[in-house]
Length: 283
Image (cartoon, rainbow, N blue to C red):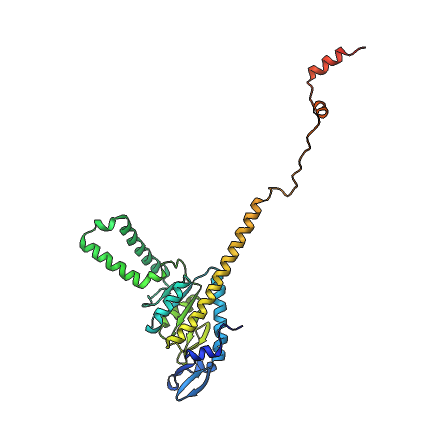
């Protein structure tokens, strides 16, 4: 069953493309018609592409991988940030730092610098600095938080990128393509879909359109995370039940108590006692 339907996409204005004179001919397979000089996106294909992208995101989340959300345009920033936070995924909604992916170790050093400043504040070292130094460190911390705070938990390269407006985030798409990281993106009629691995033909300017598609993808990630949690719980249950079993697979046999006669017969005699008994025997 599709995650959305034609009417929901229509109500959100997902079908509105750009002016005909601004179109990219490579988007022709996803265009339904032209009306009043504006291209109309084929929503039937959008439904299929949303399902395809959602399934990919679900499987990545189920495998415990991270998906980096990228959207620096004004109408998409808050929507993307809220959606990514709700499923504990990293996101970039400010300026894309050059070399974010291709020079990832340097970005990690900047994040570690931010963590070091936090430790200084926590252990009181910050208070021992001069007033001017404290001001410089505070400003540095605020700048790092603004640009890199949302990716502080990203310890390795993401498994995929989700992008809103591939024209605006062209640098992010180029870096991902260079490293072979799959890109999932909302692609409007004025954009080139060639470098995108999972194209979602949609209006990437309207807040309603962005919000609807982000909600559908967020739900898919939540499903993947839930399935991952259930599998882990199941593994823990199996391990616990195996620990409760006996070490060997053999049955534990219990002995019946012996009678007094049997206990006496079971008494072990020493060699000396045997010799004395033989001497006392009648000839």
